[in-house]
Image (cartoon, rainbow, N blue to C red):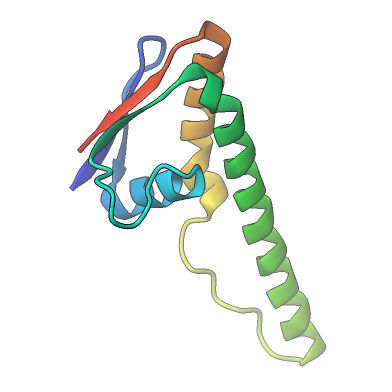
Length: 111
């Protein structure tokens, strides 16, 4: 399943289901027990969504740095990364949000 994020001021942004759900969970729009197949992020919600994504990226990077520091202290090899970082996954969405915020437009999504 794919998530398709749309707005009037940007091109569509398509994410695989796990990545789209993670993004929505971080910004508080994918809660257990509620359907998240489609929705809308209003212009007034965008600054909070950007801040939440940036905080999650910073937290993930701090955890990775701590894991590397611990591995170095124990003289073991650095830990294997879990794939593509949240920074890379979230960047296109954050840019979409910034453009929508400047234009005062909403972001919609559907599955």
